[in-house]
Amino acid sequence: VKVAKPNIVGITKPANDNEPVRYGPWLPTKKVAKACGAKHYFTGLICKHGHIAPRLTSNGACMDCHNLRCGERHKIKRQTDEEWRTAANEKQKQRYHANPQASYDQGKKWRAANQNYVREYSREYQRRLRAADPARNEKTKDSMRMKRLNAAYVEAERQRDRERYARNPIPHRQKSRQYAIDNPEVAATHARNRRARIKQSEGEHTKDEIEDLRIRQKHKCASCGTSTKKSYDVDHIIPISKGGSNSISNLQILCPTCNRQKNNLDPIVFARRKGRLL
Ligand SMILES: [Zn+2]
Ligand SMILES: [Zn+2]
Image (cartoon, rainbow, N blue to C red):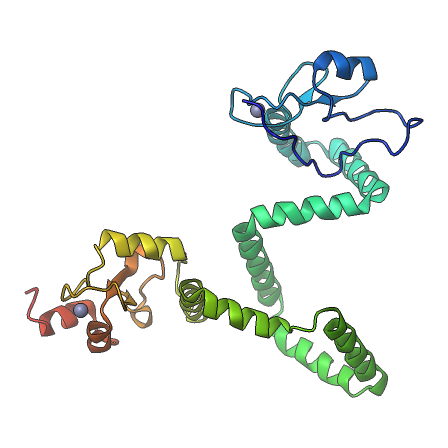
């Protein structure tokens, strides 16, 4: 199976003929790559582990496989070999200075592919900072108040806002409001997760998990069996206020009537009132 050549961040053709060909993912075969002295070539064929990636000229290995193998080895080296770590950091610094934009693009791509990790990491990071200094948030607010007493600072802030508005006249808030109107399920899930997080409940769920749950319940209310195709509420089986989790295993779809009745009741109490259970 032949496919289009990948767009590989940071690996570009040399700008002119005088520059040596170090990377050549646009070269079709190992032979050609070898002749040019290029480190890579690209056949467009899928490797035996399912990757579509450039190959190494030296041994024909798929780059994705190669990176995976090296990644594991490097992870261990980084933790155990001080000298290796220093050299690796230095190399990375040089790579960054040679082409900052490529590093930036690569980081952006990685963050987009690992959004959950990034979100969890930054939450954990903030948690750590707060744990080290419980008054941290108040201190930040105080320092902002002090800064805003300075006329020059306030003017610079306004100037920055004006420039931002000139760049993007539709404010971010308006955009996200429109997104919520266009994607009500996503917005509702987001709001539930946020409420649960504020109440320090464990767990998170996604819009797709809710969709899946609706299908598993055959679009029927878990309590009375009414159709929930047109309107439905997502209910925490054990309420968050009673220590219930916010993950999909503690969620059920109810019709709005049942949800209003259940309100904040314990599931057992609710079931008894409905004349079921015990
Ligand atoms: Zn591979
Ligand atoms: Zn119902």
